[in-house]
Length: 310
Image (cartoon, rainbow, N blue to C red; front, side, top):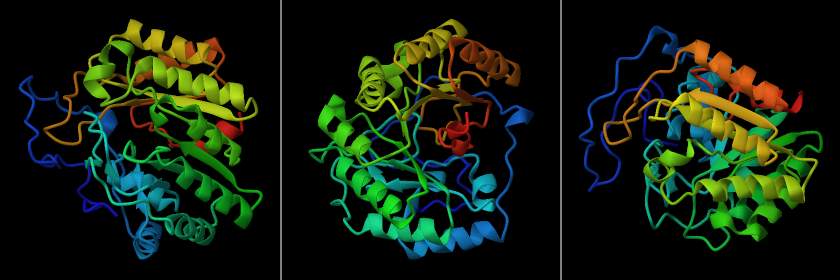
């Protein structure tokens, strides 16, 4: 588990890696009232935290400081984060720790993940990961082990994966898709102009190509991607990114507000009003997306199972 306490993960923290300097471009504006989040309580969230700690499993809920942690953990759901808790990239929006030499891949992790999912009686499991550019296949086989283990334990379970770009390699991507995931998610994160600033080591066109290839290779899979608002983009750029995603055969879309995890991370340039999220949802619906989640607190796996019902 992340060293962050579940009660404090939404507070600003010190940079997680030495040598990172603070930005000089000013502070973020004050948070508006529509960004209040539900606090974590006792009961299911405490039980879930204990279960995950006992099995030495990470969740993106705590490791990436998700604002919906209280709601999701209170409902007994979580998004598993595999391949450790350290990422080989240092994206300016993400609170996961950076390490160019993370620990070796834990081959027992998929077994523990399956055990936890069965104990939680999950019907839809979401699996994401840190980026592991240090591993030849980008960690694809760990996704495969998790997917196959879940399907073997419960053939009726549905599995959603949120993967890195695998540096554009097709073989790792195909391996994950062959394992039988039901939803394939890879986030574009932001508009084309801001990619180099926000996404360490990622490329706009490469991410789009990964999504298009996923749909080409497995037409039956639901393809999904997400964008954050508030990083300095304008509304026209957002609409163009949404058009680009649909043009690359993406079925499902998430739109949410960027929240700054620490002073080192990119500042929040604006807090988009809920009315803009509603307008963008209508825009995306008109383009033909099968499912759109759009709102200030929406994240990639928020209400994830709804995408399969559309």
